[in-house]
Amino acid sequence: EMRGHARATYRHYREKLFSLSTEDYPSGETALPSAALETLFNNSETGYLILSTGYAIQKFNQPAQHWAQLSFGVLLKEKLNFKQLLETARFDGFAPFAEKVLSGSKLSYETNCINHEGQKTWFKINAQTLRDKSGICITVHDITAAKNAEEEIKKLNSELDERVKMRTNELEEANNAL
Image (cartoon, rainbow, N blue to C red; front, side, top):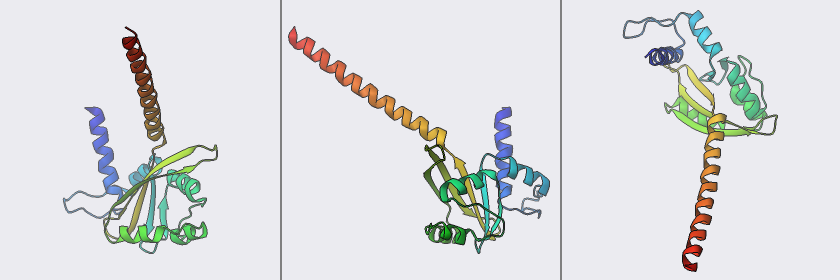
């Protein structure tokens, strides 16, 4: 029960993160105090990258910086234009992506890149407009462990299928010999 409450509280605060405001909400609640919001933002395992409608980097945390470095080889810095930063890294797919998000679409995709140890690092990227339509919030989740587990399950299933085929052939041969 306590876990469920903690998850609900986390979701509640995360929802409020998208507003980035201290104004009252329609329900009469007040937004999170900026210090609490800052703590949540900076201590999350989820990467957050907040962009203005003109793609200027307004805010980001360490997991978002990690993703940008691995995926594009760029360092994030507040007030830099994210679109131009990616263009210098020869990544031209951002503009159509950002335009869809700014038009109201919520986008989600999975991607991978090779880390400095030569292994794949997987990310799930979600993007949506901020509640007040003043920009874009991109969330980044490292899903490497889940992807590695999926691959291990596929490998084990394949090995099991092969063993079943071999055993079936052995039994058929033994049956034919009788």
